[in-house]
Structures are given as structure tokens and as C-alpha cells.
Image (cartoon, rainbow, N blue to C red; front, side, top):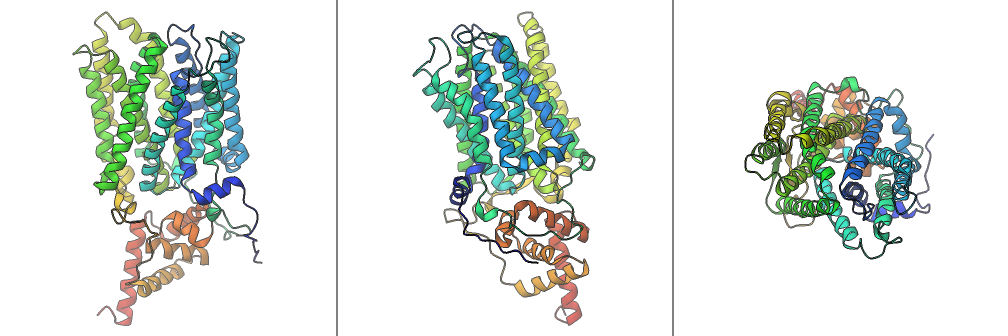
Length: 532
């Protein structure tokens, strides 16, 4: 029985915002990154009695360890976390936990309660709440076409920079207690997680699932929902992430812990300047000049540069501010790149974003925590003895080893090449340079024979009526978002039907689908004599 839906129902503010600005929710990633950066920078919550960054390191290790534990648990217990993330109240609850943790951290300060227990508990709560925001952002980006994921991730970097400078620029306007955190810092630390959660849970009315739509009997989830289905190249990629973040965080842990907080703020300011230049320059290149981006080259370039920085820095005695700022900037670029690659993997391989981001981001943080701890315990004891040079060279060797033996360019191609996403075609974002972007329409030139081939293929493969519609749109060139809008269903439902189509046709990519339709069309033309 068909269920009719009254589309004239009153919209909420969130759905209205999502309809007017559908891109807004993807910038929630930038708000979350800004909160994380401000928290680990310490400017917004440290008091004037701090002489070094030991409390910063404590916050980093406790909160990130808690975050990693939740992320890896999400990958292992995907169904539980998917239920939690499906409801807006679940994501907002995670943000509330992070905000309560921020309040506990501020309350633990020397000008308030001065009780260390609140500080440790607050750090753990911040990490646990942050993990849910990561997973929800991962779901959003995992549903995006790779080109759009890249663009929105770049824009989120600019959002991060703008929020950072706004908060830091107003950080000294008013302090509720003299010597303690400023009012602006308290507001930022407490409210930014809630703002991020609000943005990433915005659902445009045009992409909301139609109530009453019933999936075909026997349909399964569109995504690979088991860790066992992950390709071997993914595990190599995750291990390479572990090695890189471990090596890069050694220096960060050392410098953040043993230098004054004011120096950490100055370093962060420079990193933000470099990051703003990187993101805006990248966007400009994409809009004006670049037609394609070779992701494997960008990944390898980032790994090689940071390895060279590690190897060369001690030899030229620049292991001070220049070295720490360079590592901080390259770490941020690698973080951005890993985020995009994880989104591409979830999209192209039809793997659950909860699994991909839970493992990928979780291991990223685990490597960072171990490296940070090693920087505090080991590198500190080596500085001034001459042995730190050997230590840096070993770190550089580990990074190069991970790119030449662990996750090589060949492994990169294995992970992305089946869907040909190792090279992003940016003209899909800007079909006509300088012209208004329009929605891609089906090719009219061969519409009738092409659709006949799609329908013939659907009939032979026993596709349902909805799967046949998805097949026709996929073969015509529509993306998941356009199909969702065209059929008035959710993106998740689109991906369900897409995976069912792939399974029934025994294919694994859009390219294979196109080839099958071409083959079917040729067979039809041959049988009717049109191909003679």
C-alpha cells in the first residue's frame, strides 16, 4: 500500500538551513577542528600560573586516548554506534559530553577549584564526545563524491583558521577571574562542540528519506559492514598512518611540553597562517588551473617532505621554532589528506564510514599519542647529548620505510585504482571554468538505446523496479546526491540500492557498470541488425 506524505509540514530551523545552504553541514568539520586546535593549544583554558605545557600534554594524552578507544570500539561494534549516530539526539548528546568535559577542565583550574580529579575526568569526557563528532563527520564525508569531499575539507580548514583567530584575537577582552581563562575562551571551549554537532546534523529536506518507502524484500546494507571485508591495502594504509603520526608527534610532544604556553601560541599562530595559505591556494588552483589531482603523488610528497625535515633539521641546528612550526604545519596537511583519503575509501569501496573512520582516525590518534609520550619521556633526555640527531634520523627512516615497503605507490593504486580515484577529475566540480555550475543531465545523444540496454540488463539480472531506476541513473552519470534528489530518497538508501545492483551484476565499480551496459547495448544492436 502506497503511503502519501504531506510535504507541506512545518520545517525546523535546521532543515530550513539545510535546504537553503546544503553545504553548511559539511563545514561542521571545520568547527570541530577549531575546537580541537584551541583546546590543545591551551590559550582558551590555561591560567597565568602555567610555566610550561605539561598540562597541555596531559590533556592531549588523556583526551585523545579516550577518543581513540571510542573510535576503535565503533569500528568493532558498528551496529550500536550507527544507531546512536542515526538520531540527532545521539550526536548532540556526544557534543554535550564534550562540553561538560570542557567545563570540568576549566573548573579544575587553580583560580577555581584546583582539584586535579576534575581535570582528568574532563579530558576523558572531551575525548569521548569528540569521537562521536568524528564519526558523524566521517559519515557525511563518506557519502560525498570525492571531488566534493576534497573541496569541503579545504573549506573546513579555512573555517578552522577563521575561528582560531577570532577566539585568540578576543581572548583577553574579559576574564571572569583575574589570571584565569578569558570569557571568550570559556565560551569557545564549551560551545564549539555543540555548534559543530548542530551543523553536522542538519538534514536538508530535499534529501530526507521519504516516509513509507519500503525496501525490497531481502535487501541488505549497501556497505561492507564487517572489518573482515576490508582489503589488505587498507590495513597497510592504516599502518602507514600509524608510523607517520608516531614520528611526527614525537617532536610535537617534546616542544609542547617543555616550552612556555606563550611559545606554543606563537607556533600555533604561524601554523594557522601556513594552513590558511595552503587551503586558499589549493582552492584557487582547483578553480583556476588544475584539472586533475594525483592523490598518490600528493600523499608521497607529504611523507617525503616531513622525512627530509626530520633528517635535515638537526644537521643544520634548526631544531627550534622553525622545526616545530614546520612539523606542526606538515602534520596538519597530512591530517587533512588522511581525512580525504578515508572519505574516498568509504565512498568508492562502499565500506561503512563508521568502520573506515573508526579504524583510520583511531589508529591516527593512537600513533600520535605514542609519539607524543615518547617525545616527553625519551627525546627530552636526549636533547643536549648529541644523540637527538640519531633519534631524528631514525624517525625519518621510519617514515621513508613506511612509504617504500609498507604502503607503497603500488598499494595506493590497489586501494584506489579499481574506481580510478587515485586521480581526481576536478572538472566535475567546475564543468565550465568561470560559468555557473549546473546539475549534470543525462546524455541525450544516445538516450534511447542506452536506456533500453539498462532495462535489458536489469531484467536479466532480476533487479527490482527501484534498483532498475538507480541502475539507469548510475549508468547515465548521476552521483549519489543527484540520484537521492531525483528519486526523493536518502543517500543511504541510494547506496543500499547501488550495492544491490553491483552484487546482482557481479561488478565492483561505476566503470564496470558502464562497460556492462555498453556490452548489452552492442548485443541488442547486433541482434536487431543495427550494429551491422
